[in-house]
Length: 158
Image (tube, rainbow, N blue to C red; front, side, top):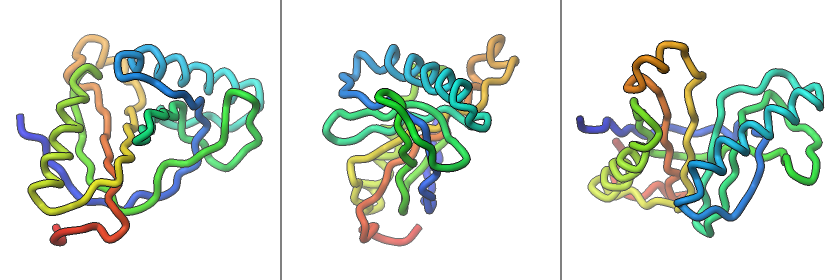
């Protein structure tokens, strides 16, 4: 199935995250562990219920994984207040198990190259709130994939 890619304007949504230098083969362990740590912190700190889980990837191998929050907060030595990247981004929605997310990222990068958009090197995933039906039908798992574009956006308007 061909991924539909669109342009969007991303807002700097506040996040609670754990940061780390993570190799690609470690992501499947790091992201869920960091998200769990953030939820434990949020409950202990009395933060309002966190939103969707997120993972932000930077060109130097740094990953921020955690959850959306409603407002900035004071963190600790492990959980930090951050935000999702702001600016023009190319995005697609991946339906299916997380192991297939690489194909969604490839589709966005390919689409950007075909349409003359320059990537900044920063990307992120927003994981849908888990629904009970996904246990029986993993093809319904929803993850939104974003790639931040260079400031000038490059290329044509789509």
